[in-house]
Amino acid sequence: MIYGLIIGIFLLGYAAIVFEHNLKIDKAAAALVTGVLCWTTYILGGADIHHAEPLLLEHVSEIAGILFFLLGAMTIVEVVDAHEGFSVITSRLKTNNPVVLLWAVSLMTFFLSSVLDNLTTAIVMISLLRKLIKDQQLRWLFAGVVVIAANAGGAWSPIGDVTTTMLWIGQQITAGAIIKGVFLTAFVSLLVPVIFLSFQLKGTLERPAEDVKLSNQSVTDRERLIVLLAGIGGLLFVPIFKTVTHLPPFMGMMLSLGVLWLLTDLLHRRKEDEHRQNLGVVHTLHKIDTASVLFFLGILLAVAALQAGGQLSDMALALDRWVGTSSETGVYVVGGLIGLLSAIIDNVPLVAASMGMYPIELASGSFFATDGLFWEYLAFTAGTGGSILIIGSAAGVAVMGLEKIPFGWYLKRVSGLALLGYLAGIAVYILQHHFAG
Image 1: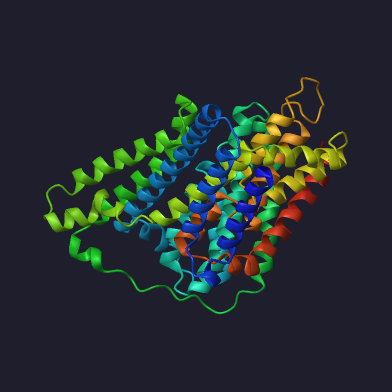
Image 2: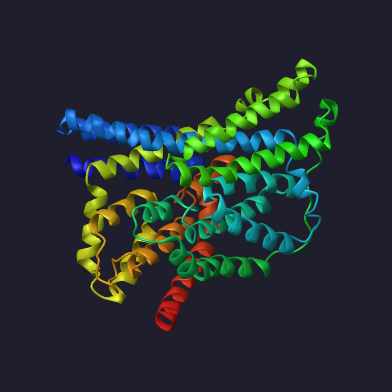
């Protein structure tokens, strides 16, 4: 009974998030209540508190790392934006042709997310889109493409997506093999939606009015460039820091934020108090969308409860019994279904459950050997399947919070494009594997 009750609570909370605008209830409130109630039901349902409490704290530590990472990335982007550092880039994107801009934004996001990660890249690109597109509906459409491009770019890089990084660290895949095996597939999953949209976009773009407030704050072109380079450099430093130190990514993000904080304080220390405060990190922290962070917390708590209660692992086992993974066809079906499920449930616990279900095999040519078919294919499907729904990936959740995109709007305008790209990518992967091995 408790097992099913937790699932019921999760589904009700999920429905409240989906119909946020109809219910007039903020999605952050629904997510927090859902997350806490799932864990409360798990505890009161007979779980050993001496086992459940450490398990909860273990999940909270993982979630906290993600939230601190998100807070650090959002703050760095806001600091750069406060100095109008992104104008260095937007001033060079002078086109008013929406199709040209669509291709520029898509390709920039795709390659940038492979070097940074899909979450950070999505945050950066949304800040750029706000400088380039005035019309909200059109900006939302571009934001949807950013989600698709960020997740596709993260899938073929060992540091571009949390799940790919998990598989890389767990030795299920190697860096060279994942780049070689998934790059084309991931690129096609972006290419198809972009080509489709290119035939639909008409007219010319209207840019937002220039914000002239900084002219009164004496931000020089030199300072603007310094802050932009320091911000982007700090974000690029995070995966390097993780690779060298093996510390969690949020530690590198906090170091980058701290260095940028020191730099901006030093740059503006001789200015008037009002100007210095408006450009400082302390002022920027007040602009961070805390509600989005709390929404993320609630969602991850709810998913963690499903993982602790065994619902996710049972679902994965049932999937394996239903389809099987003893043949290539079975591997393709199971991996494809896991990708579709990652649009509903966070891909991290799904991939973690898969890693637990299928130990690495030493036999050369096995589907489950290092760089085997299953792991490489899973990296693509779990990474890109989350684009089908806006809450299916960290990048989507961040974009949803930053742009206030309704779940239903994304489902109607973007989900079909993401699904089309996802299926096209699977087809290309199968053909590539069949002909090129």
